[in-house]
Length: 198
Ligand code: SF4
Image (cartoon, rainbow, N blue to C red; front, side):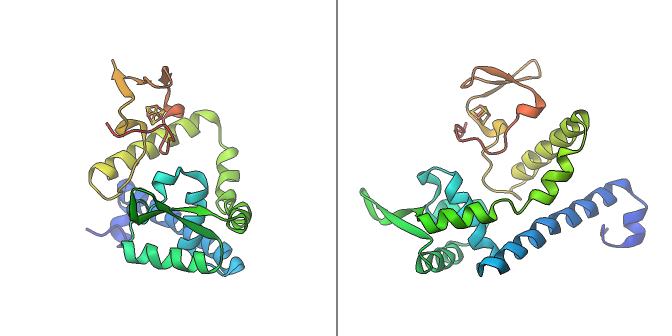
């Protein structure tokens, strides 16, 4: 039963929620395309620059990036090749394995990130105006949806508390043993720099 069949969609709240999420997913694509056109880059090239800027070098290998963005390694390699030709990134060879390298931004690459990473701001502005209680409910639903999609292997890499070795659930209370603190719903992370696989 398709949620895009309007009879099905409008007869069911479940279907309307899924159709609504599909509509929301278009927002990122549209906003990213606007930036991509402005800087003569593709959307994935901008996403790669932003990701590289904000993650450690172990996460900037071709393999990791391919998994992160759900693309094949040759597709990511091609995008990286263009970014290198445009002098926006540099490759650093691994001393222990010369076939492998990590990727860092050049000063120019960093400038592009500063100018493009706010592409989701129209959405941030709307969320910022919602009341705190609604935001917590929204975050709980989004973070739960993400972890369920990860378990179904629809979303690949997830550096979220629920997959982390430092996470514990004690009598339904979320705990981070690394930060040594209770995690309220609003504290649950979906991309944590201290994340380690459990
Ligand atoms: S280290 Fe980060 S991801 Fe892991 S439980 Fe703590 S806050 Fe969550």
